Image (tube, rainbow, N blue to C red):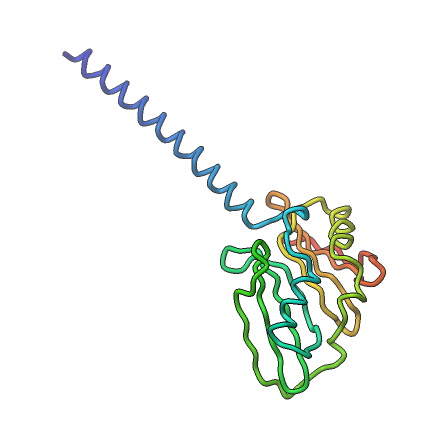
Length: 184
């Protein structure tokens, strides 16, 4: 009887140990999936920046481009297009996969800064900027943006690989790497 009790105890322990190992494997796989959802590769981007800008200009006409960003918003990869004209500023969010406007808002703005406005055609292609960044740090894209900083048109590109991340600033006209900052 004692031997039967010990056998059951050993068998139960082995089963529990086996279950706990399977569970941690699932959690590890789940954590990797969540980490993969936070980054994207260049060839996974469906909508071009030009198309996103065109869609935003259909929503708010006659506005000039102030900022363009590609990031994860509410679980979806999206473009965020910021525009303005005299007395009004707008933001349009376009879902990358569907290419559809998923959010828009506009507000009155008294303080318009013309030196923040730009034409997308004045910048090198976003793919070229990202590829240059990935030569500095070979990570996947967490997000990128294009805007003017102190009058200079720049791409800010956040790349991530494992637990390492870099924010790389690229001159959007020349393609020159201006800064490569490691994020902790």
